[in-house]
Amino acid sequence: MTTRLPAFEVLVDMARNDPNGLETLRRSMTEAVIAAASSDSTKRRLKGLQFRVDLERQRARTPLAAAIRISEMMCRSLADLHASMVAPLEEIEIKELPQDPDHSNIIPFPIDR
Image (cartoon, rainbow, N blue to C red):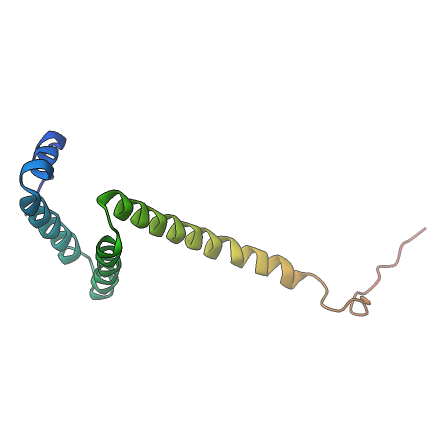
């Protein structure tokens, strides 16, 4: 069973008039996503990520500060992903270069004239 996210206007109304209800909705939808994960390892990783998000929300002084902290977490994660995808290519290129500075391992090719 899938829980649908209410319309934006309903969420705004809940934020203004029923913040506890909005928090309950957020938690139940988050738990549903984690429960629907395909494997136990994915569930553990999602729970760990949610723990970190909740910690950042608690540490922030305002909801806007919490949103900024979580956005920064996402940007760092994306940068780490990018670096992990680029780094193997750089390592391959470096490994193909000669390792010694005097180039004693390079075999010269004869040039026919």
